[in-house]
Image (cartoon, rainbow, N blue to C red; front, side, top):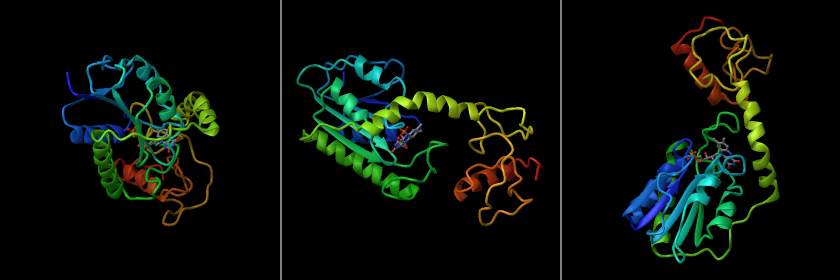
Length: 252
Ligand SMILES: Cc1cc2nc3c(=O)[nH]c(=O)nc-3n(C[C@H](O)[C@H](O)[C@H](O)COP(=O)(O)O)c2cc1C
């Protein structure tokens, strides 16, 4: 039994890092992953119970709401929720609050690793990776201190209608997007396709003629290159180029 329990879901590590940093500040804390069923659902012995999870498409990652419901918390326990997002928190905290009324809640923005929604480095406020990580660590330590001090938010977290609609459309949209990552007959067998997706980005098919980004020339990963991805994102193009340089596919 630990004094505190933090339940965490993390797709690409930001929330796990935040949860661990809050736990470090709190001391004596169990950090429990929210998978299909969390390993420990009975938190009735804990003095403080927290939840850390990301915003995905305005809502919660699949299965997280079910995990919230599975967790048992004793009446009078101090509860807190933290969501991480790249720009806006969505409805997750409000869903959590309707299941386990929250004493305290907070939001930590960080970079996004989603391959189709944003450039990886887009977040609010705009920060590079190092600064974003420093800020995340600083905010997690602050949240830990606020939880230790028993701080309470005066207002409940809000859910806006746009995010609700976005979250309900997400399962279908993500399924469609995922289909585009499958290899098709257009695959030229460059050998770069790992299990689960193409490293160059969203579509594995010959590209349409698109405007040239600066620094890329026709015939050298220009508009004829079948691997190209977001033509408006030089940083992603660089990733595509470096992957090609490591494993020359010989098609340009
Ligand atoms: C599938 C997916 C959907 C996302 N949707 C949103 C969103 O709607 N709004 C937002 O601000 N950030 C969004 N993000 C960014 C994540 O919430 C943010 O990067 C978070 O720190 C990720 O935490 P994690 O690394 O623990 O998964 C999304 C990320 C992914 C992977």
